[in-house]
Length: 343
Ligand code: CUA
Image 1: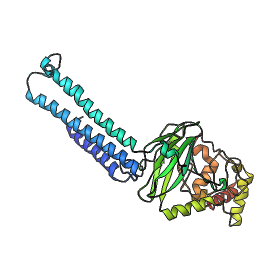
Image 2 (image 1 turned 120 degrees about the horizontal axis):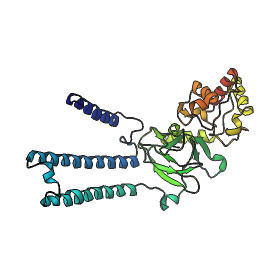
Image 3 (image 1 turned 180 degrees about the horizontal axis):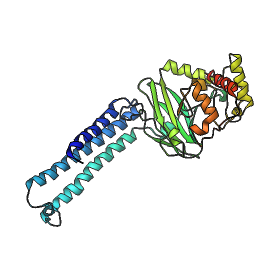
Image 4 (image 1 turned 90 degrees about the horizontal axis):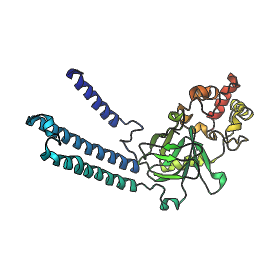
């Protein structure tokens, strides 16, 4: 590579890295929006700074050695220059132990600051329960009375400025919960293992997450939205979600309800307050209120809903949702209108 090309390329790489850090990418762990993520970001910067200093000092020594021009590099190799063995002891052992030891201690201190499934945490019930499925997130808000429990999918609401404990489990394989601007990665395990994290968002906003443990062909389409709401909005959201599904307001949506209940949909999906009690796919009681569908891999709009019902296997091959080809144009439009009305 010529020198003329090398420097613009280096510039573009550094520029790209700086832009990625600073332009507010919604999933950027280096722009933390909560206490746990802030600690992780600080740790990241500390490690980067330390290794930058090590790199600069090392290259400085190499250039210094070259500038001395005393013999060739071979003269300075330890087996040729017994008096230089102290470089091995100091540079090759003592300094790395000091640097890596310091990073290790700082890292342990950061980890200790996360309440992650300790006794104090298990003494209280978690406010939110997340269950990983291939390939979507079930979200529950447990309540004392079973009928008050909220079941939703792929979207978690939390009040901004207040820590929320989230319990993590899996129904099938190992998944990993990662909302980079709010917290580090924590795995969801099948069986009896229950992990917990405490998530807090500084300010209202939308924070996107992604399953970060490979869990099958649609792992990349397992996205999650955490909406941090103002406390009053959060309470209003809880109240709306707790209520059973609204009855269709118009005759067209009523036709959609008929299509849903008599077709295949009700066999796999639940809509509280109706005869649909399927437990295979996500609860759809308030699907109209969600930002996305198909685990946030599609926007929740008319075209995406219709496409998802009829062509799920093209959009997300191997997902448990089949292609429902039985619905004709008018029935499909009515079904979508009904789902959109479930706010
Ligand atoms: Cu779930 Cu990867």
